[in-house]
Image (cartoon, rainbow, N blue to C red):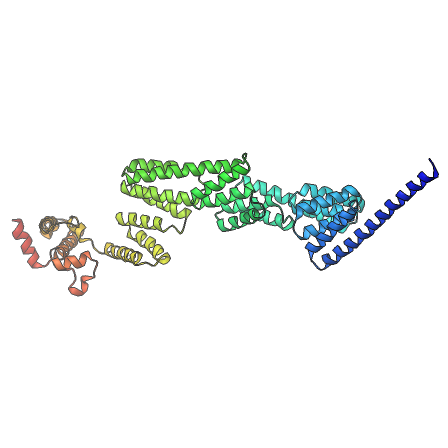
Length: 474
């Protein structure tokens, strides 16, 4: 090689070296500017300058590490993870890089990978207190995951929410933990909280199938079945193998179809078929509290039509156990109690309704039940005479003569003193009953539950009645 060629090579090497020096110098300047913005908490500008430093000198591990720190402050943990991994690829002994990689893994919920990173730092520097603490945090997250998995299997959804809250305090960017928490909130009936968590995820990632599934689940449990199906279908479009979305979609469609069949049978007055269809619908998904509450109430309505009042009451009770705010179920149960003359129970239900919705109609229903309760605690003169409440004057008169003859003291003169006393009491009650029910005005007031004691009472049945009895019986 000649002197001229050697000279050219040396010159070229000097140019390259000079260029590298200038690039490195320029990169350091960008890094310093990035540091200044980082200190001011202007992380966007810091990111821009660290990027310029990387562009100028792409083989410097500290630049990637610094940009990773900035991305972490911007909560862009996946990008930060890539930068921190690049930093340790360039320098495997770079402790800050390993620490930041571990913290990114932990924030994203990968506690096992995080542990490996913190362990690497401790191998390089056993006394590193930050790595020691973060290693404990990673172990804690793994334990919370284990407890949550066990809790979910046992359907202890409150325990799962508790564990996920603790895990998210250390792994704030983990969508998996958030989704599990949201799903359990939905299963606990805390739909606004569940929807809020899912909505936050969908704002960041509109294609997240798990979040779409949770949104659908909340709508499904709130008995908005058509909208729920739309979310389940969208989730399956994003993730065709999403088994939970597939099952929920199938249940939602089946529940809607069966409920509509029951409603149509009821409209057609085919009550036996409606009862059976509602029963079948109730078996589809025990977790759907709101829809099942409506199904129980619907079946209770059918039961009342079929004169199965005890069963209707039981169904309405099941409905209000599932949904304590379900006014229609309270009203249906109260009417069944009224039909069974269980007025105290009816009053209790109507009071619950009126306290919730103070309408004129509910006030009227409550007052009517209270009146019937008051009436039920008086002597039932219709029962004393053995006639129905719609008995005619002639029927009342005939029944009176029969009962008066049955209990007249002369008929029991040979009986024991105790029997004589009891028959005399019944005889007087027969007289009282006839005095009231044979007088149109008193009968109306009695039927309306008015206290007639102030109007001379319901007494009577004196000597003029005795003479009437015997003159009529001979």
